Amino acid sequence: MECRRCHKPHPDQLYFCAHCGAELPCPEPNGDTARFCSYCGQAVPTPPPRKTPPDTKKNAPPKVRKSLLWLLAIVVVIWAGVMAWYFLSQDKYLDMKFVIVPQGCFQMGSDDSPRTGPQHEVCVDWFYMSQYEVTQTQWESVMGHNPSSLNACGNNCPVNGITWEQVQQFINKLNARGGFKFRLPTEAEWEYACRAGARQKYCGSDDGDLVAWHKGNAQGDIHPVGQKAPNAFQLFDMSGNVWEWVADRFDEQYYTVSPKSNPKGPLDGLERIFRGGSVKSNPEFIRPAQRNHGDPRVNYGDLGFRLVRIP
Image (cartoon, rainbow, N blue to C red):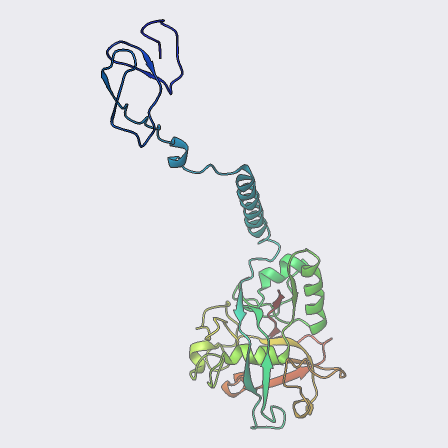
């Protein structure tokens, strides 16, 4: 502010008499509403308090720190990389679809015959199982040939006519591609997945024709996977179509000594077990508890398999 007498600038905290222009000190905040000029004696009102301009910084939105932006960028890049790996890796796994089989306990086996009994309680941890039996196309993509003797229905039919040892070769080659690892299910895992928490005659229903291709409805040939209804775990063809190799060795007395938690079969024995029945089986042989066994080096015409994916 400029003095009206000397025309010199003065600090803001001083003000001037409106009558004579004399410089006056600012009054105390709690002082009188009016004071008197020491030069002219006129009353001088107290100036209104200065208004502080609003702090625009307080009302402005907070700035996002660079570190948070970098963190967000890293998360986006990682997510994009994982998704790209997932889609690019589908060819590695031949478009095999897997479902989660939750952990649980069940009554394994049946007291109907010495081969299927005694019935006993078994508990298994959760695992991933392929929804469908491995197809002829998937086998050929890994092994380079199709050994199936039953192949009239096309490449989407389950591979068949393979030995247990050939299945191990397939798994080894598939695992060598990198990424996920695979194996055969144990006998306990297979039956638990077949029953799917229900007490039914077949894997998913009391009506064998609803869930299975068997001797009574298959007209002597296998069929493309997934044409029948699935069980409660969304697994197809657990009953019928082709028998399925499992990992366990066979011992008719094993159920009497089997551990309750995650049994893996006897440690000794030549023969391996297969489950589920086939298009050549009568309905009573496609039930969940039915088990069969054979030499792992022998080629059986109506025998295939499905996989478990290791998490």
